[in-house]
Length: 214
Image (cartoon, rainbow, N blue to C red; front, side, top):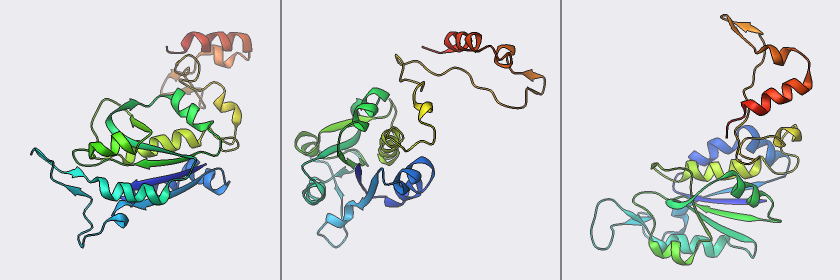
């Protein structure tokens, strides 16, 4: 699976993908992640990626030309072009799982910034618009990383223990997971529930079912 991430802040992406599960996935050859500075596709001396909005108003709007040129260069027959935007579909585990199962997928992710992106990009160049919640961030880099991380960890062979995927939160009728405990058994007079120490697996399973949050 290939990810091409288009951003004006490449270092934000670079720092994250060299750590944890995403790094391991790249080392195993499960994913390839390419980071692109949108300024590469600008023509002016200042490498401008934004301009003032038609009709007036505060802030700046990301221009269509460099994004169009970037997609012309990066797109393949398997490409799915995504864009981060507060107006997009709120990302859910079901969608992440669906994306993780697309064969030979190539995801191009455009990271939005400023007051938004020229509407002609949304209308003509994008396949999937997404948000990660009902709040506003400074830019789309964090949202792009959420999508990459969420998809990557579901790919075969990425996690060290595949069984950890079987009972994950949001994957079973959108339930959250049950409470987890580890050693020590007692800390600051706070005790681990007795049922988890009993060794009685049926009782433990029943306790966990009851403790799951819908």
